Image (cartoon, rainbow, N blue to C red):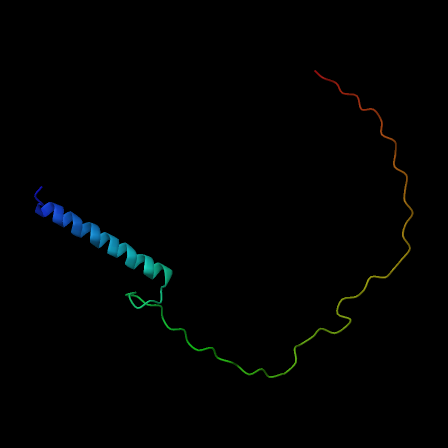
Length: 89
């Protein structure tokens, strides 16, 4: 069987597709790799701003008033259920 130019071009396209998929997979897994044409930008360094005070602010101890404890009302009696008539049309 003789190989024609179309058979050779088909093999070249299949090989190029496989190579391209491998490159895309490598860039997807590791965006910082050297083969990435659009590498991630470098992040600026973190700036440590000095704090004017060494302690954290806290609320005063009486910020929320506490409820006064009073007497609990006695339980009331529940009325006995009555029969409700149902009228169907």
